[in-house]
Image 1: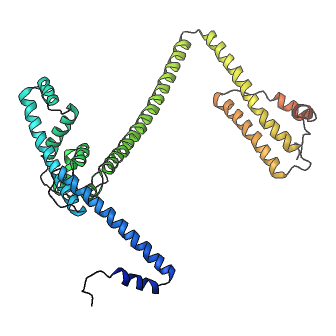
Image 2: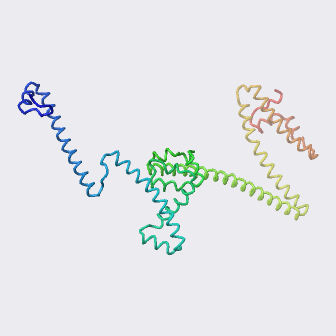
Length: 330
């Protein structure tokens, strides 16, 4: 009888294999080969990890979970290191003065831009009344530096659980550094775009008002100039100017009647002009005539109706003048 746990002999394995179908035996053989290959690869990886840990003088656990927890621990330590380094940089700057300070930090291998960021972090985040931000499991130096774009009030609001620029504390914890950077910059860009749009609208309104005021000022200036010019003219000169303007305006008014004449001509050229259209044409001419009579009445001007009487006495002449048969009796 075989002892429990002892591997079966090759003879026993061969005996069992002889009872299996060839296809099943092939699958089992392939799986065993794969398992042996995986075990060999795993052993190789483990050997490499053990060698690297020894080379790095690392004595902790080599599991994924333990390594991630330790990484998070040192990330939090890096946040503390930024704040502590910022404190000392601020003090060093006060002790050495600006010119000497740059030489000192360059000797330490710290760039002036990075030193400014560390000092800004210390000044900004040391004012936070709560430490919830620093207690986030995934807070790190990169995220802390990205949060520098927030002002003191926004930092306090974020630390209190409020939403700031579209994000909350949970978002800071879950986002990567690049995702946090994009979120903060996008919100700021949208805000700046809104401000720029509002300023453009106000500028447009002001420009329109300025143009209106400029147009009014120019028109007033023209009127004043015309008034001054008229006052310098004699009565005869003024009469001549008015007569010239009156002639020009009369020609313009007569020219404006040409489309009305054309419209009436088209209507009267119909084989059977509707009564409604005839009334409309009559109303148009009555309105024009009424405007003329009104002007004459307002200024006490007697009109010469001899031409109208001649036209009424000789209606056939109307055909030659207006270009269509007269139906004044209609």
